[in-house]
Length: 339
Image (cartoon, rainbow, N blue to C red; front, side, top):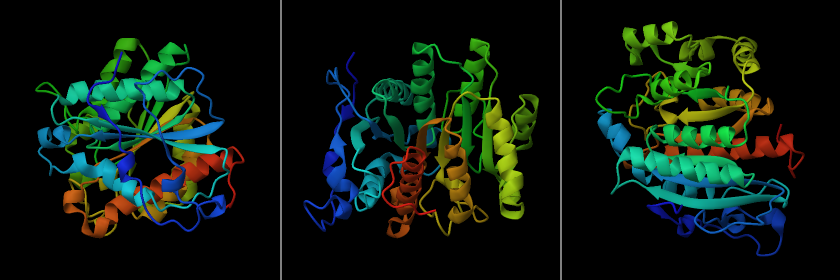
């Protein structure tokens, strides 16, 4: 089955060239290769690799009454990733699997297409990095992860770790949005008879209603407040994360960039005056990846329309750089060890 509304995005990979033949001087735009998920990829072989795929959607943000602009984000993130250095072994491959365009289809159809794309990426043995898009992106990502677990008859107890100022557990009786995904996922888990495992980090008290806190409590959703990350020691935070992941055979990680302070992430739908600092979050991301349970990553809610000097897109690129390098280190595939 061919993926609809699916296009290449290789034109956005360009940047500085320090050498055409010295790999140690290469940047990501010189190393990334196109990956057409609509082609027959029988015999595809890759020792270790990552696949980027963009989800060009802002419909969920619009439905959630947020500031639109996230549909442009995937290509802006690619431009910021282009000049990142290849600090990993040349056996590591970077692929760009293109964009899912959502301007002429419904959000739900777009999420379904993204899910099938992620499922195909996982089937090729690659680690998917999804570039949102509004945070509705993560529901499409989840569909692909869940389908792959079913296909391989693996345990369905996949945990979801979400860096976010918001629970995104809103009711969706009048239709889903960028604020309802984790409630939708909870309902899917209930239908499957599987325990719902969801851990949001960076929750802001002033950004969530009492109803949402009560729903989280009633559905055994543990969470870590932003002020806990700001005021607690790492040992306390990491213990809570380890306790959560102990009960999960696998997990995937999603980041809503509104978890960060507006000083570092001005280009989001809902800016946070008291959000987190990136340097407080990056060590936590590394720790989660080092559990070797994470099977996918997405970053959402970057809105170029409101981004000053591409600050938020640059932050997104640095976070992805951290994810790639941490995963490569776990597999002894780093040329330079930064830790």
